[in-house]
Length: 262
Ligand code: IPD
Image (cartoon, rainbow, N blue to C red):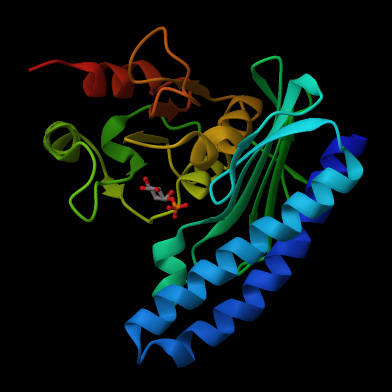
């Protein structure tokens, strides 16, 4: 049974998701004016964060907060904070691609203890709590059982708009593409991790990523039986800005490849 905190997170994610779905339907009408669409999506994003913050703050006024749009705020309780991306996959949303999500994580003493990733366009709700498994719409999920790289699909994110670690990413791709059944770049890190948890991808890695993009997904993968780490050993996969996740059979091989120096 979901804890009170998880229920609060689910309620907030669904409410923000409803608002985003309504705005998503409008985006197509705005495509004519690229500038207009960009401004509209920023407003939709900020409104979703406002809804989530209001819901979470009303229910737990003393928890801290970090959100993509509104930044960091300390709470009276220094041990707990929400880590929120109201709209992960913003570029997909802007282009009318139905692959984006609301991502909410609860951190306690530096560890993620509850997660919600809600793909409102497909009505897929991924949830996890520490020690209680991972779920997709109330059905238990497990990472994939595949053992061979050549049969496996991996997701990643690649730098865009001139930002991010392009040479390292191209090196990773050059090493992995010949060894695998395919590499996907779907544009929403929270869903990449949720899909690893659901056994849809065997693994995922990305460089130059933010805590709010991955915090919730990290727990989904762990609770679904997978492994997650920073690409830089000894650092936090949530905070270090680089992440590698996979089923236990393929984790060492994937991590070994993306950790290789020249
Ligand atoms: C982005 C997505 C994308 C990843 C980028 C993120 P945003 O998040 O998760 O998949 O490759 O690094 O910035 O900006 O859409 O919330």
